[in-house]
Length: 159
Image (cartoon, rainbow, N blue to C red; front, top):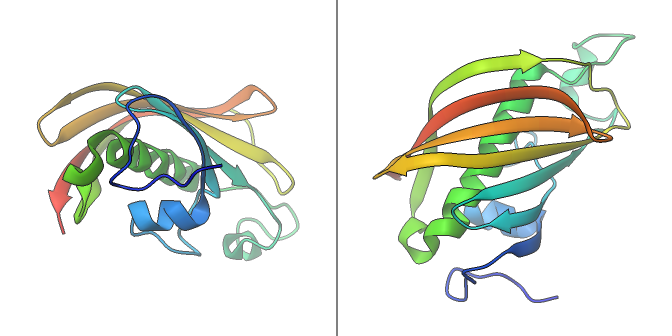
């Protein structure tokens, strides 16, 4: 398996970006890094991120004691982090030293609870971009079943 770097970015599909590489691409760090790996990127089209939900997550102490549920807002954040990896992978060297900021979230729906032990997949699709502004559609799935979805926009900016 080869390592993806900013200087050898392929123009075609990329598979299996590990957490160490994700942390080179986006500034998030545990406990706020919400994706464990990105299993597929089609530059300028789509990406699939993965979060293995474990009982050790710090938010489960309060959400909810005795009935742990993965917070919906963190699913939205994980969708955004997956889309940020898509943006960086798409732009290559042009993305170095930049950040991807949320601008808006629309049509967010939470359909089923996500619990410890679930493998949570985030499927993000670029709808369009104009200059620094990008719009995405995303779904979160567990065992192939949609558990959440949303559309959102983001802007890529200098650090």
